[in-house]
Amino acid sequence: MSRKPGLSFSLRADGLCVVLRADQIRHDTITGLVQEWQELGAQDDVEGALEALAEVCRPGADVHPAEVDALVEAVEGAACMGYAEMEIPFAEAVRLRDVLDQIIRRRALRSGSVSGGVPHQREGDVA
Image 1 (cartoon, rainbow, N blue to C red):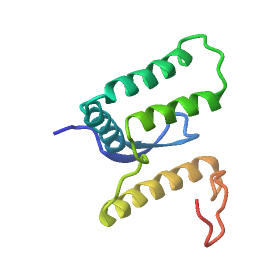
Image 2 (cartoon, helix red, strand yellow):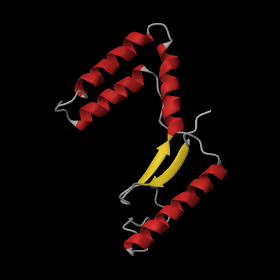
Image 3 (tube, helix red, strand yellow):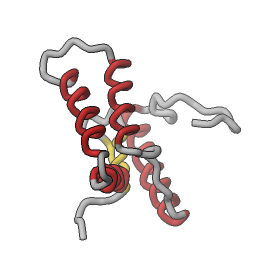
């Protein structure tokens, strides 16, 4: 059993950002890649897509972010990967909300602002 928290929020050391940790998504991505890798003929497609991505991600490469995005999508397609999503049980969602609320309150107290510099969302808007 892993000791890493599967899903958590924390405040970055400089206090300017909240860090979301979602290890289950990484786990599911890697195991999904390995499952597809085991399919006959899939290795060539996945390997080719990974090599193309590796080429533009090399140090010093001058590449447009849209090109990287397209190559990442090519890897996802070759590996038959779905969306990077996970289901969160309601009790876990409440726990995470409480942690995030604590972080926001601490940040607001430090900055002297109730909003803490966080843009407000109108009721009914989707984040």
